Image (cartoon, rainbow over all chains, first blue to last red; front, side, top):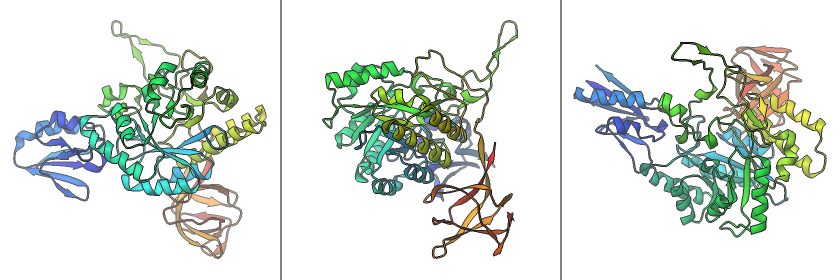
Length: 76
Length: 413
């Protein structure tokens, strides 16, 4: 399983995650911060659990590019 | 410009502690960021939208003007939050927005909000001032201008009667004190190149402040550089020539430091307040400048220089990576209770120790910054000379303390 987490309230809306993983991230037109698609929010931590391992590479690039380090990707 | 005819002293507020410190020490206006679209999106714990009414309330009580910074570069996906921020700011009676992007300027104007042009726009001449005067009542000039150039602009505004949307002459603002950037008007890409972290989105990693060596790739020789912090400018300080600054015709003096600690804001604002007042009452003197410099040196600084204001062509670079401040604060404990009738404050000591005669600092979101010397103290309900970790410390204080307050000891750095 792949677990992607986004600590959304710290996002500065730079758009890098969308550039690297456009299928998993999109910018919210409402508040200008990123949205982790199909994630579940638990106290500000937005988590996506997926069995599709093809998303890992793009998500890891987004994780690496994020200037405020609020994305984490784990494979278990 | 203030109603007293003095120049306006504008203070940075990165959080409620600093805001209160600025208000308590005599600022005329404050500027602050809300949410992510400001130049300190990373450095400070920014205010959130819901804080706007409280900021406005505290400032209006003291007749202090409030400016929302919304001066990063703006992408399409930001347009909606820009509108939300501006609408909420207007609703909360925030005085003006400090903007650089045209979308922000236009949106603010469309809802009738006063606009100030940010230093990010790099305004360096009268024609540009005239252009932005169509939208803005205050314009922050580029930090790279000399006072002579600033004066020419302010004289021309007067002569040509350049007016903003309010119908009043456009006011010129410059930076008076605080950190400077190695890049022209903060347009820097260093942090973006090395960390993907754009300074122009308020996420500067400050890598210019580090030590670097230059290596000749052909020979492998390290090039010797006298000052190894070749990209880190010293901090700007104008207090020793504040008379010339005011004579240049500026109306607003901005203090940098939204990422700084509340005691920094308290000290710098208090010092500049005194200096501005003494200019107007004719008591500005070299002796006072020496005192003020000493006070400014006690808080975070990278060494001081006069910026480009006195005609200097090249920058002055700092000699170390951190602060050259003469004092530092050490965390001691937290506020527990205040007994208003007896004016007694109780603190819990959580680290180090504290004794009679120590200089202490109490900071908090509502308390702001209070500095005092301990004269009498009780430890665990008994008279004592010293309190250590785990003790309960009670002091007689003329002001209320709160659970969110922190107690620090001030020591020589």
